[in-house]
Image (cartoon, rainbow, N blue to C red; front, top):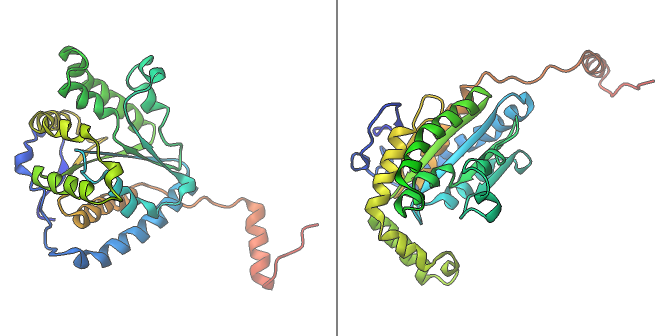
Length: 278
């Protein structure tokens, strides 16, 4: 791809080393459509196989700055999944009930069942990002969470929850352009809030927080991917590739039918008709 987006375990991430406008060999969206459509078709088939196999589940974590493209990615790529086996969970400010539990409680109860896919729009990483930037808990509290998160994700992986985490990397300039479009388009005004501008003032602090999260919490079991996202079409292609590669690597298989069904199928094939069951 030209720019390795997977953060290998133990890597010290400096986001300045990752070009958010990178598009590899592709010059425009039209160049990517054939490959993207093939990948989406493959994702559709692989989801059916995972659902039937019923041994693994897939957790997709999406993090980004405001206007980073989380909703757009879900709408453009992951809408291919059958909603019967896929859920999207948005994590906002914790509710009173959630604050009465440990910070991972609301995460754990939202995990996918076996055979299913769950997409986290924001995630447990908010507790080492916004919590850190705004000093919502003492430093020693959020610092301890990196190892806690790694232990939690390793436990999930050991129990057949496959985890892929995507940081949608946009430039500050691109964020400004997207926010301006929200302000100027009446159909998008509702997505804008003054809080977005306040968060933008903390851009540098967020970049430091993301660098630490990406460095400390990218593991073999639950890797982070830094996805160039200034160009939405390249973002979509990059994530689709990773998901296909991830699911194809699982040792999944279609379940064998029970002996009775095998016999019915043999008789149907021999006669060209459904057999009567007496």
